[in-house]
Image (cartoon, rainbow, N blue to C red; front, side, top):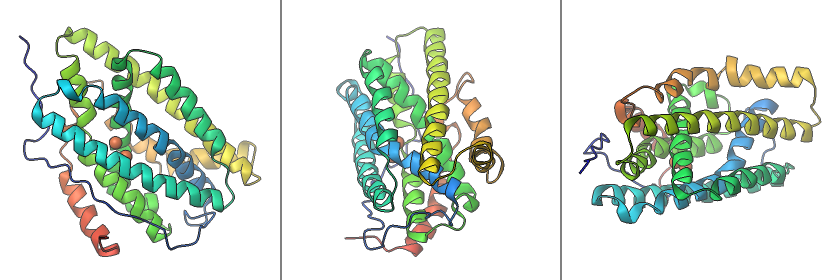
Length: 284
Ligand SMILES: [Fe+2]
Ligand SMILES: [Fe+2]
């Protein structure tokens, strides 16, 4: 029988941090330092989370019964974290709505994409989740690594994004290990080629959908045309350039022997958690 080794650190603990953000503060339209393109990109990302994270949970949990006890326990903690992230992004998206944005067209597109994956066998949903969780984890790492990404934001909203990033890094191995376990009897090349194809597809769809979503929100601010596209591109790829800076981590996914925990970034989580704790006391 083929055995599965799980290189997630043996002493890793996945700890759901039940925090609430922004319930007392009024909705600000341009919460990202008054920058319209920055607000649009982050709002477009946030619009995907409630539906996307529910899909991740549903996809991974289908394989929980077959998982070894440690992984099954991690799936439980992952589920709790994602459910709380969705709760906070529902609240965040409601504030964006109150500030005058209509996120419905963006949410409809997410639903359309996810429904297409749901028509395929459960392993396809797990593969998409595994790829998207890597994507989320590398964005989360970059978000915490360089404070300029949330530079002049409203502090409460910045804290929410950092809290989410901490937990995304912490559970970055769960979908991957579930996928490895579910495909443990597959030939190595098949595993790699499916994984690589899914990542390429997911990345293409992510870039197209988030770009269209950001442009739709900018249109709602009355901004259209090539100068607006250039501003969006500059923010995403040049300065602060989140998507350029994650490229190497994205590409590492295709290397033989890749595992999300080949890069142990728990020190970054600990540092972010200390500053988050200082920014806002934990709620009862
Ligand atoms: Fe999440
Ligand atoms: Fe996640």
